[in-house]
Image 1: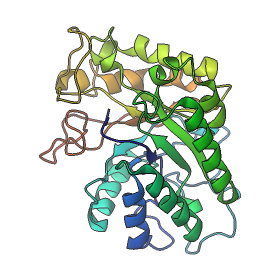
Image 2: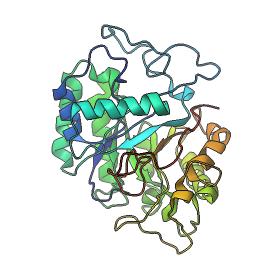
Image 3: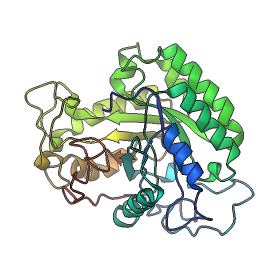
Image 4: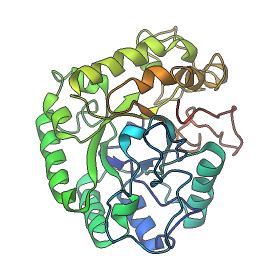
Amino acid sequence: MLHHLFIQFLFLLLIPVDLAFSDLSPEYVSMTSAAHSAVIQAEDMTISSGCEHTCFPALNFVMPSEVPESLDNWWCPMACEHAFLGFSYEVTPCQSLSQLKKEFADMRTNFNSRYFGFDGGDEWETRRDILFETLHSNFKAPFVTRVVQFGSEPLFDNVLSHQDLAEQVLFARAILAGIGILVTVSELAYGYQERGGAQDVLDAIDVISVHMLPFFSTKATTGDKAWPLVQEDMDWFIEHGKGKKLYFDENGWPSVTSPSVQNNTPSAVASISSEQARASAYFQMLDSRCEDLKNAPYGGVGWFAHIYSDSQEVGYGIYGVNGKLKFQFSPRTSC
């Protein structure tokens, strides 16, 4: 759950490393990394009916050599994006530009990732201001940054009251409106529910970023049996979200427990066989429910795998700390 984080900004989209107008400057990468970390969104875009036009960041998109004059028809419509999108990715270690490129290329090439994001530390007000300044000063930023996200779990972790958080979201939206960047909050359903629903926050955000971590439910057992828990939280957000797009941004099932990852019921099993993307696994379960997720508002739910590597959060990685895949991972990107 990354509870050591305070307020972070997630959902930053970087230029796919194999496309690029020209690479983002190291200064831009370091500033956004220092500002915060991100959820990596996967970049495939097997385009569904009604979404056939080329757009960024679809895999069939050819990056122009020059930055366009406007954002018109630049981004793929959110209503055309569902199923697997990408990964959470921790950048608190401030990885080198070469490592970022290598791992982002791996996400895109081997897993059809569309979006890359960042997730980081807790001096949130200073980092917020640095990030906003960077987004405004770098003319490429609006073409590679789709959504800025407050998190992780600012309500559940009692970082701000829901009233103050809604005010911060509206402030951020006002600051970023001129460059076309959306704002959201990364939060558990329970984080809203234990504050009377925090409808003011749900009304303030542009899209809904859901922490879907059913392992922590008091009703959890194994990943392959987690759909009722996923559906319960998803339905709550649909009921209260007023038709907004839903993303499962911190979303997964652990292979091991750790001091920060402990079950809330003895029946919840953390194991490779529970996490593994096959018939008995959480991600395979999500993949098998693609059509159900697609029926959600605004073109359906897009989901991220939390997290890219166990070196970023123990137990949740697709890769182990040894750099090897822990299990086969090839979810659909559309259905």
